[in-house]
Amino acid sequence: MLIRDANLEELPFIRVQRVSAYEEHAQKIPAGHWEALKKAISSEADLQPGAERIVAEINGEIVGSVILFPAKSDAYEGEVEELDYPEIRMLAVAPAVRGKGVAASLVAECIQRAKEQGYSSIGLHTGQFMESAMRLYERLGFERLPQYDFEPANDGIIVRAYRLNL
Image 1 (cartoon, one colour):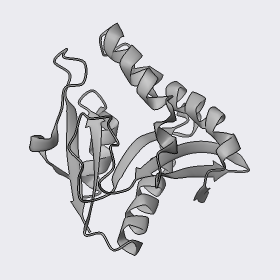
Image 2 (cartoon, rainbow, N blue to C red):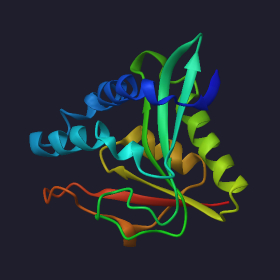
Image 3 (cartoon, rainbow, N blue to C red):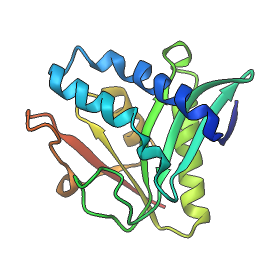
Image 4 (cartoon, one colour):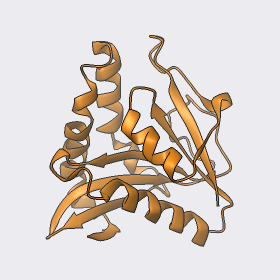
């Protein structure tokens, strides 16, 4: 597996792959929430200044991606106050390669980059319906920060905050 920076011309493919990776959750949440999530993960938020676009490649094929937003950026379009540490966002793995360590490798790369940049923490948010993602983050040592949770669609579905001290 090769972890590398994404090329800008790969972004349209990556955005489509993100939606495909998240589609399994569409049946667990109200249609309006799914539409808002789909819009967010396929938006151009990944082009914000300082955002690091990272992909995982197996045999020359992109099989996953993640965006590492810099500290003090608006990674959630006003939903969360600007935090003093980088945020992992839009982690996505192609369904065909799940269970092969792609997500863990992408998160590990984000952690390493945050350390190299001198940060003492890294954070992320994930929907309460993303059980496998929460298990991964908790296994990696991320701790819940409920004070940074938010409810983007006012439908009772909470986006949970996590932070890892480095």
